Image 1 (spheres, rainbow, N blue to C red):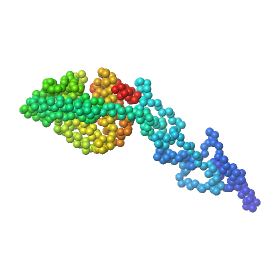
Image 2: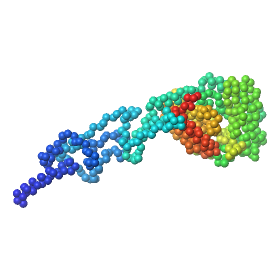
Image 3: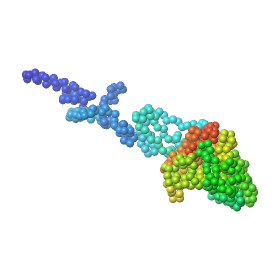
Image 4: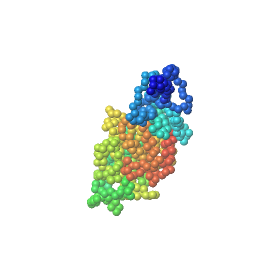
Length: 544
């Protein structure tokens, strides 16, 4: 090729190279003077109008987000990945000013006060997020004053969990929460039993019980071997309001008996003696080799009714027998009205029935060793009759673990020193007291409404035990979180009412809220009443 043709070809190549660009960048060759003038970094380019095709995002333009707040797939910017094995060429010396100008870091907007909650920085809300739902409105038309769930921040609506970042719900730290927590503390202070009241009531009750016990033990009756066992809320230290109700169990040891479960109930049994030697004082109460609970209870009531007339300085009467009730209820009228339930119980020193094998789920709460030790204790049978449609089976006995319940409540923490003088305190018992008091006040408020007559404090206590199993750690029952813990217990109880299921804590096959025990109308009535109280700051607590 001649020199003149070679020079013409070289000039054409240079001219073509100076005009070729990709996404505003020069790929090869040396730019012309006009190109260098255009690419010089001067003022920031104005924002591109909507609809213009976006260019490739530079890594330096991505906002900085804390790693802990992002899903793994969002830890990197949404840039297009380069093909594997492809090696990027370093920019030429003339390209660098242009790249730095387009890739300059954008200034982040300063965080406002709304971006902080309880000392934690949160990300601004996505534009597509909807307004959080308003608090529930109770039947009375007022919004809840201190419901824990309403005061928590609602999470962003997430159509696709991988598209946005979740913001954790904050702790209760508002004025309303503090006010409600203080109100609950004020209620608990009101429920504390006064020492002088306890002393006066205990003196009267002990006088009555000791007199009856001596009478039974000194006579030649069938109950001369009975012993006293104190149970119930007073001895569990969860009694509310005043010491005006006491439960005393008169236990009678009955060795070598055989239990026959009644209709797969798990809780009710027929009692038979494996051997019935001559002189057995309980032989008088046998019906076809079955120990009759009704006959035995009737005789027990008869002896007590005669004996209370011989007690000096006490005005005591026996209340009318309630159908299906295992207790003999005595009412002390002077010097102060006190109700005393005396319950006859058979003490059985053998393995617990098979129906209890999966019950008492305290393994993760109090530990396996504690559960094993508790199951080595005797169990009791009380003359509570099983219900058959519109009548009762009067020869049945029901399992009772009231002594185990008392042990659990006395040693209720995962830490062995929980709530001791030098130990760390929790709010478990406080929550149980508030739940018992709520039911008590609702019954008082509605007088003789039949819908509430089928509910008792044992229902509340059973739901509370399940709540302790669901939340076994002491850190989940901090005294400062009283409102949250109480609300959590109420939610568990309301769930039992909605689902018609409150499982006996010791007998998993025994449902305390089955239709034959508590009808649907009664459950729905109590459900609505508790929800109303919960949504309106518990006005029933203020009425007392």
